[in-house]
Amino acid sequence: MTVEIDGSDTLLAAVSQAAVGVPVDCGGRGTCGKCLVRLGAGELSPPSEAEFRKVPAERLEQGWRLACQARPLSPRVSIEVRGAGGRRQILTASRLTRGEAHSAVLREVVTLPPATFDDARSDLERVRQELGVSRVPLSVLSKLTDTLHDGDPAATFTRYDDLLIDVESRHVEQRAFGVAVDIGTSKIISYLVDLRDGQLIDQEAIENPQMRLGEDVVTRITEAIEENRLVELARTVREGINETLASLCARQEILSRHLYDMTVVGNTAMHHLALGLSPLGLASAPFAPALDEPVRLRAAELGLAMNPEGQVYFLPPIAGFVGSDCLAVIAATHLVSKRSPTMAVDIGTNTELALVNQGELTVTSCASGPAFEGYQIRCGMKATEGAIERVSFGRDGKPEIIQTIGGLQPVGICGSGVVDVLAGLVTCGIVDRTGRMQKHELVSDGGEGREYRVAVGAGGDDVVFTQRDVRALQLAKGAIAAGWSLLLERQGLGPSDLQRIFVAGAFGNYLSPESALAIGLLPPIGKDRISFVGNAAGVGAQMALIDVRRRSRIARLRRRVGFVELAIDARFHEVFTRELTFGH
Image 1 (cartoon, rainbow, N blue to C red):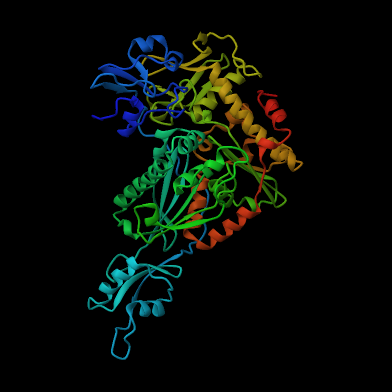
Image 2 (cartoon, helix red, strand yellow):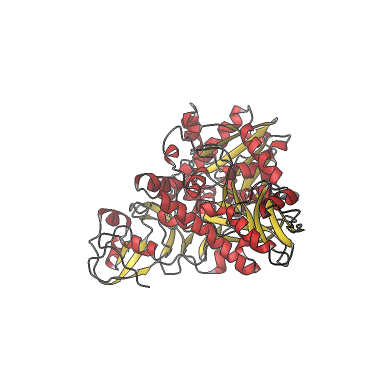
């Protein structure tokens, strides 16, 4: 593949332009050290200070460079991009139910009385009176006249409430389709639904293409504001949605014009960036969103590949860092109906926690960072083939069973594997309660302190878990544990009072409950009271899609939610420091 770039651009700009996936946690600032490429031919700029810090000397000698730092000096440069192990494993399923269908879309064949000398009403007036619609867009009106005057007084009309959004021949396929979309920081999942009966037909998941511009929310907010890339970020995520729609339509052999309704959920930053709203208010305290109400737009306004007059409904976010995805989780788990203290936890780069007690619903969020998803970990990687996803340890502190995605030779460690490794090291005493790595035959001194050799990788390099990795996970775990501790304390509850914990999201689905409890990631309760519910946010989006009445209910539910801002809680630092330790 050949790409032309400006001489001042980095190699990262070139591979991004070519849509080649390269790991980058830091948005190209040279701090994560993961965008490794190797020079094949040509000349590059000398290694930067960041590269000397992040790339081992022997790798620099072998020609490995950071794509975000290296710039071409010769007219032509060839590079090798380090592989990421194939397609990412993305969770789309859930064990939750979606309820009954009551679609906003009605598609039916209607016979209209023809125009006569005695009844010379306009086509528009006849449609309004016979169908009971009050609004007919110009794009539909232009098709209406041709359809009604082709000799057949009957036609297929598609309504969205009191809006006429399509008119076709009576002989076309009568089914109408909708799509529920969950925009995550790292993935986009689209669920194709038959709007007549609410049945899920198909689903498609891809990596969020915004990842090329930064793998965490804060980086993308910075890119939107400081680098003036808001339009690019909005276009990129919409193109990602269109990619999923194209795949769904192709597989199911349906026309994109028959996609009439869409619901969208996501964290507040993804919500704003998808709408093209400035995330400036999310960049600093008090983290006020641009809006916290539902938004409904025409598909054409967003450039989405569905019927141009189809409607796109964005569920409302709750707060600056508690989005509509959290609201969807609350709806899908029916949290407010629980009579006993119940908590929902969605662990990710930004972790949301929701607690209900005696009808009172409170939520909070904590910046847990991307460590639990395998980012900013020395050998961390996405959940792709070759990633270590399960590890069990013997009493001697050595791995007994190592399971990789696809059963391949290890390439790195993904989020669930990272938690297993840390839990095993803590349980075996190789990592003490303060998080310090102790001496062991598999522990050696590396470039960033002590490191534990987990396995020999596919390329012959060791897959290691470092002291720095322990600290990254320790900080993330401390933030999450401080969040649920303070939520419980505010209600006068302790962990033992919790009757159920719903763990939502992709990471939670693959997480070992034993490992999560071993490091104190979840409240210390019995495993039988922990339910892994899969992509609950996607279920909530589907509930709003198939039953239009639920949209107003969910919007009212949003007004019932009490938000707790941990950043201004006087006890946060104290509790956070306490929760940094293991096994207390």
